Image (cartoon, rainbow, N blue to C red; front, side):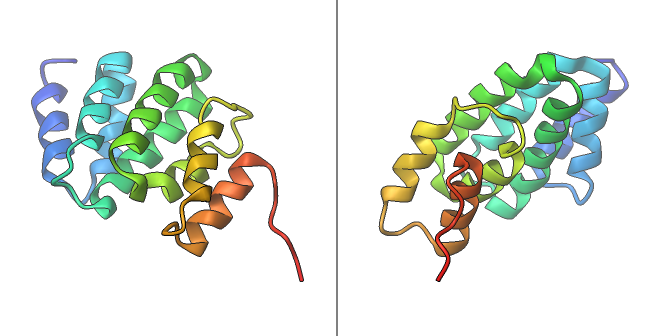
Length: 136
């Protein structure tokens, strides 16, 4: 990562900075894969609240949408994040639903089968899977 950005960006990922989304985008722009990996490590930090990881998921989603070459790396990061913390499923499902990728489908289906998955997450998972939601 560029000498100017690297310490600032990595500090923002670990601290839950108010502008972590913007810092994550700046890091991805400056250092591409290395920044994406740093964001992936920050997502694995179980001491972070889900709300602190949402901007990082959003930044990865935007990077994957605008720079398709990063999608495989980002999908792998999202898969690892889902394994560690199912509470991130709602944000990840929303982030990836337009990607047309099926690589997370098995994890999404497993989460749908869990009784403790909340209705909002079930809705987002169904949308990501393209199954829609049953109507009355």
